[in-house]
Length: 481
Image 1 (cartoon, helix red, strand yellow):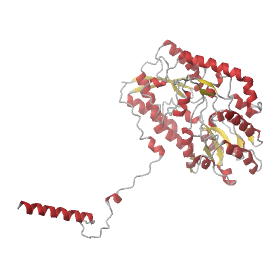
Image 2 (cartoon, rainbow, N blue to C red; image 1 turned 45 degrees about the horizontal axis):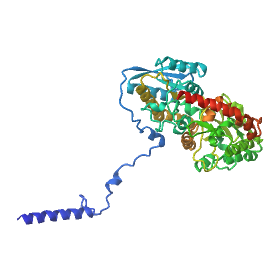
Image 3 (tube, one colour; image 1 turned 90 degrees about the horizontal axis):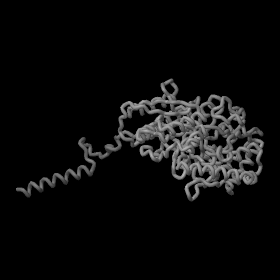
Image 4 (tube, rainbow, N blue to C red; image 1 turned 60 degrees about the horizontal axis):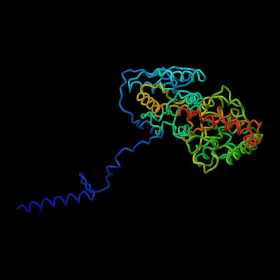
């Protein structure tokens, strides 16, 4: 009897398997053409790269600081210190980011503003010397913070365990090059939108590109073909195809030190910088810059020597120039200042073998630092990290929308280049410290002005000044470490 029952069960199982494998269904149609369960699932909507930012975890612990004050010393024109909504997209995004962090960790953000310069440096140094734990976070300019670092007033940011400098909201390449003997006294990231505003970029007139059947610079960038030779060729030869009109207005020629990867210094075996500027590559870069500015179609226009000027070179806004150097934040005003279409690209590479398109920021970009009088290191690290992560995940997305907004839609073509520009953000010790190195960066500036025509001869003439200045600078850094 038991054997019959077992046999019956096995028979039922085999029939069931056969029905399933043959596509049987409860309707009894026997067609086998019913859609598979997977085909009935709704398609997953495509998520943009910007939208993916919001899903990145900051990995910060749950903390409640019971309404404790979090005091931030910042320069007066920094867009970080926003106290209320006013209807402006970026302003409100910053306000909401600050509010979210404040509520998440139960802290009260207080902003103390001082103009950049001596007054700011003195405030930082005096607090450090007094040990008064007055500031939980410092947001200052690069130059001011360098002066405070040399005074011994700042701590190594790497000692704050809750700040993760490998996260996407920190500019890793820039922070790596700011370190001195492995110690980082200032860092830059998405905490303050001024970093984005002050990034050096090149604008191009898209209408001129189309009218002259030239390849789009954005395509050149995406194909790793946007190099200095191509830039010079378009700036010089391109001008002739535009009926002899000026084809480029390029200022801040010293930024080619960064973009063409011709550093002023390199790290020595002891971890401290040594001069490395009189190299074959630096000479070639200098020669090409001389060629660029000798061209009748290229002008150095001081109208773009400041951030976001009220007026831009008429050659560019009037549709007569192919390129104009400037700052990323200029895009907002330019869209109102000109009727023609323009695009945004990074400064060019040295050649196709350079690994990235490099750029930097003007000295005014807001950087993070902490004084030696810092009290609650854990709170400072956690709140700073949360603010920077929040900037990356919300404020930057809104800033992209502002930069790319056009009268007839959105400049989608430039969106990927913004990512490329940000990825190549870096600094250069010699350029950052040029005010303490005999203004070595002025070599390129003077070549653009025409007051220097021989880079090697000028460098040799001032070599002892540069060497002595760097030796003094290194001694100061060694003294505070």
